Amino acid sequence: MHFPAIGDFYQRLLFLLPFSAIEFSVPTTVLGERPFLTGGLLRDFYEARAVHFHWGSSQRKGSEHLLNGRRYDLEMHIVHRNTRYQSDEEARNQTDGLAVLAVLFKVVRTSYLFYQPGLNEIFGSLLHLGDFNSSYTPPAFLTLGSLLGNLDRGNFYAYMGSLTTPPCSPAVVWHVFAEVLPISHLELPKFWQLRDRRGRPLLNTFRPLQSVEARQVFHRRASEAYVWSK
Figure: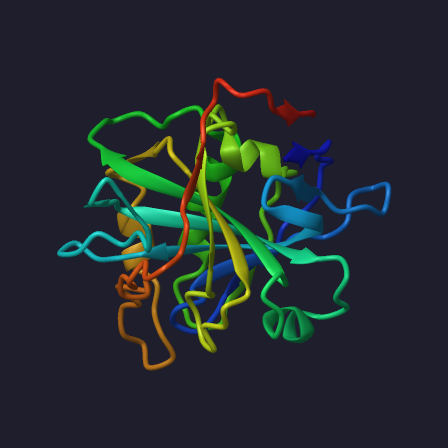
């Protein structure tokens, strides 16, 4: 798989419906291009389109994937669309329509912020999104690379699966990173303070765990040759 250079871009955070939760679109770079994925299980090129999060509550952990039977506190999805298709609707109706990078987070009790500039910018922006359907534009430039930080990008699980939001179409090639990123116990509650259309706390925005059934799950280890260019 090849991860090409990722340019700077502004992001607008959007507060959406339950199960979509916090989401922001990925615009083109200053060169008019989009970051893309290809290789591995992906036979085509997949352009980055949007990023969103799923979380739980003070009572439940909110990741949609489990690693070694463990559920984590938060999950981020970077959604890519196959360039063969012209719209998200068209891509959702194809088994190879979408590719998603999934990053899991675990709470660490600390009084300081981790050096994750892009993520810290997003977490700080949540304070401006308390009301349903509100939006906010962070003042700083963000990159997809800044959202991944020092994550080991060569160690992940891949499988053919489905969307975790309605209509839950079987259209996704999932890539779940094996390394789990930290999130401060001071940052996670910011997600729990968001509100739905009725003014209630927007909690537990994750899809229940689904059966693996006959799917093959592949593990790509960091020791194998991989390309990531910035």
